[in-house]
Image (tube, rainbow, N blue to C red; front, side, top):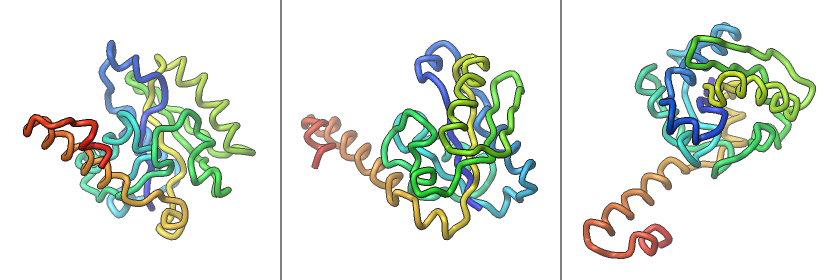
Length: 178
C-alpha cells in the first residue's frame, strides 16, 4: 500500500507553531485502523505544492520506507475532494487527522469525498488550524492510475536550477521556467 502523508490547515500557523509529528501520527493511526503493515508500504504526498511537498520525505526517512515520485494533484490544492483519487472515484476514506497534542480522529467512511472535507476541516480548526492528515492508502495499481508522476523529481530539478542560477549570478526565475 502507498500512504498519503501531509498536513491540513493554514500554512501561516507554522510561522507561530512548528509542525510536530502530526502527519506521522495520522499515518500510523490509519495503518492501525486498517491493520496494515507500514514496513512493507510506500509513502507519497497528496500535493507537491507548499510544505506538503516535502513532508512525505521526512516520514519516509523516519519509517524507513520508499517515497513515490508523484502526488495526487501536480500542485497545491485547497480541498480533499480535489485529489485525483477522489476525481477518479476511488474514495479517500478512511482517513485520519492528528494534532500536536496527540488527539487523533479517524473517519472510517464517508458518502462522498466532499463529506470528508466538510468533516475534517472543522476538526482541523479545533486542532489549532493545522493537523497531520492521512487519506486512504492506495494499492500499486490505483496509484499508477491516478498519480501525477515525476513531480518530486521535477520539484528537485527546479530547485537545483534556481540554486545554480543564484550561484552563477543568473536570473533564478528564468532558470526555473526553462
